[in-house]
Image (cartoon, rainbow, N blue to C red):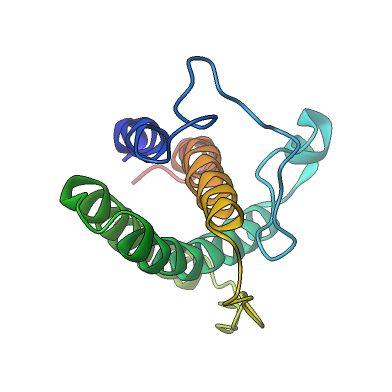
Length: 164
C-alpha cells in the first residue's frame, strides 16, 4: 500500500499539467479543512494511547475514502482520457476502505469503540475551478500517502505490543 501511494501521487501530478507536473513541485502549505493532516509533532504522537491513535487513523481514512471518491469524480471530468490515473484513484479508495475494515477489527479485538461514520466532506463546492479541483486532488493524494505511512507506524507499534 505504501509503494502505491507514491506512484499515485506521481501519476496524479503528471496528469495535471504545469505547475503540478513541473520537476520538484511541492506545496506543503496547501491543506483541506475537511481532511485531517497526518503531520503531528513526534512527542504528541508518541504520547497518544492505542485507542487515540486508532481513532485518529480511522477518522482520517474515513475522510480519505470520501475525498478519493470526489477526486476520482473530478479527474473523470478533468482527465477522462487517463484510465491509469482513474484506476489508481479507485484502487486507493478501495485500499483505504479495506484498511478501515482492518482497523475496525483491531479496535473491536482491543475492546475499543468504533467511531461512527460521518460525512466528512460536508458541502462540496461544485462550481470549483479546474485549478481548485487539481489543488484539492493534490492535497488528497499527498495526505493519503502521509496517512498510509503513519498507519504503518501505528500498526507496527500495536503488533509489537500485542504479538499474535
